[in-house]
Amino acid sequence: MTTTGHRPVADGAGARAERRGRRRLAALAGLAAAAVALGVAELVAGLTGPWTSPVVAVGDAVITLTPEPVKQFAIDTFGEADKVALVVGTLVVVALYALAVGVLSLRDRRLGTVGIALFGLVGVVAAITRPAGGLLDALPSLVGAVAGGLALPALLAPLTAPSSGGPHPRSTGEASPGHPSPAGESSEASSADARVVDRLREVLAGGDRKGAGLDRRRFVVGSGVALGVAAVTGGGGRLLQRRFDVADARAGLRLPAPSDAAAPLPPGADLAPEVDGLTPLFTSNRDFYRVDTAITVPRIDPAGYRLALTGMFDAPRSYTLADLLERDDLVERDITLTCVSNEVGGGLAGTARWLGVPLGAVLRENGVRDGSTQLLCRSSDGMTIGAPTRSALEVPDAMLAVGMNGEPLPIEHGFPVRMLIPGLYGYVSACKWLVGIEATTYEAVDAYWTRRGWAARQEIRVASRIDVPLRPFPAGRRPIAGVAWAQTRGITAVEVRVDEGEWREAQLSPQVDADLWRQWVLPYDFAPGRHQITVRATSAEGELQTQERRPPFPSGSTGWHTIQVVTT
Image (cartoon, rainbow, N blue to C red):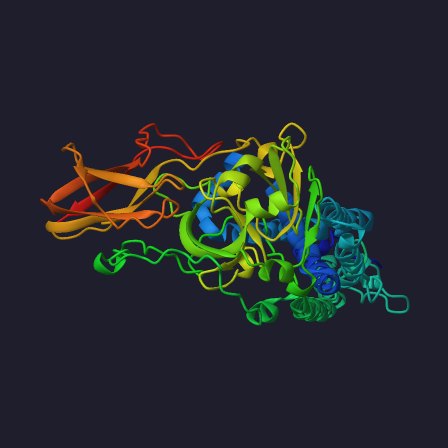
């Protein structure tokens, strides 16, 4: 006698739950495979250079392809942490992509192979299309993709292992040969017993209706091994990348004394000690703003440094760092730099005491030709900055800087050599990690920022900023203070207006140099309540800071800085 047929439990809710669990584990397998790929890629990048890491290469490509308004939003939102935000965002996208590839691979291994191949291809293309990229830069992405391609099938294998046992005769409701159902046993009881046995065997065997098994223990072990490989290779890669570090070489570099030192500061030149919260006259290297496109800061060995002059020169040559440091015309100057991305009232401006070689002298001794209108300056990572040749020749304090605030340039600020041209925004004058200067014309070539719609050349606009007060404070006498700048022209007046009152002239810090910003302060008696404070400045040429509000793109922000304060 045979028992009546029944619908297997595995085809119902239990099977659906099993499939959902299997997909979750497949997604985790994709994530672990991606971790292996990135870890191995970092290890290879320890040999080829930190800039060849897929995360760095893709991040650099994202920066290049991102529209300017989005870049400005990132700078405004994250400030100098914009690179960190980009790397984190890139890793999040990679993680989501890996999760999807893992799920697709469970259905069809070919989809997983294609997914990993695309993952590697993106890294390869990003690496070799960098301005300074080469075929060797693609190696970390290639090797990482291969490692990920090997890891993913291995991680998925426990999710699709053959079932450890075939169906038992009783699972179909048939009596075992030689063991006929006892006479009188009810069909209902036999069916119930069969269902219990079927369910028990399904759990023990881990099988589903397709005959595939799920070995969770093996999956956990495999995932642990994969994550361990990712951690070891990634950590090892980071350690190997330290060999590209030049911090020790920088620390051992001794700067010579300038032949032309900066003018001594007059007494009381810095008002910051007297006004709490006021920006200091000089910005420390640690606090100096940094805006560039480099996710990984270029590292140049000073012993192998070369600055090559090419293009429209009569007798172009190259310079070692020793050539520059041993010159007898080193100058020291106090100069305020400003980023074109600085919003009205923003903090992307800073002052330092710079040491360097006069730029005009270098250009003239190489015979720069009259027809040159642009210096295409190139950094070691391929970034190009277009500076006007005329400004480089005529601005007295334009220089090839090698020192900043009494020490060699910090690595993140252009070590070992950067360019400075006072009076111009950094995007058209302050090339960091400088390795090449090509004398050319604006008609012949567009530099990096010009290709993205920014003005080809732009003088720094007259600007002023309120530093204090910013937070609620008790009513009464309180200083209103800040800084103002108009490099190469200087500031002669700063005026402040509270609410709709009259403009009042603020006290200025002593004049030091036209290239240096000036602090200002105005004591004011505040009544209780909410107040609006506005500031404007006037240059030594008589130019009044414009009230018209414009964003940084494409030629620098304009407008009066206005804040709201509350007194109690």
